Length: 103
Image (cartoon, rainbow, N blue to C red):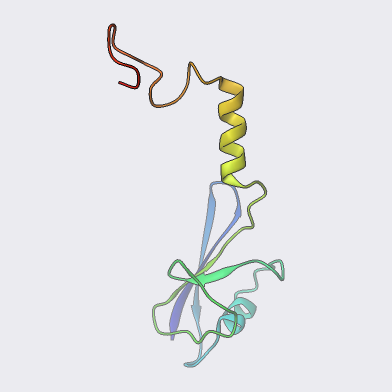
């Protein structure tokens, strides 16, 4: 059975590793066969859906190994917005002359 393991060792880098496994293999067996050293708690999924390591694979599955987020995206956006200021940033920063507020 052929599957594809995809992981990103760093920002803007993606590695694809084709694997040939026996039928009925699990996600944990595929990770072990790939030879990629991963953190034990690294989240994994199949076709974009998070799965446990005991999930059974099927022919043509795409195994994805996700990196853990260092910063919550919502917090990062709030910090960026606070640094820019509320007047010069955002959806309503450019108004037409004489337009109503918010347009």
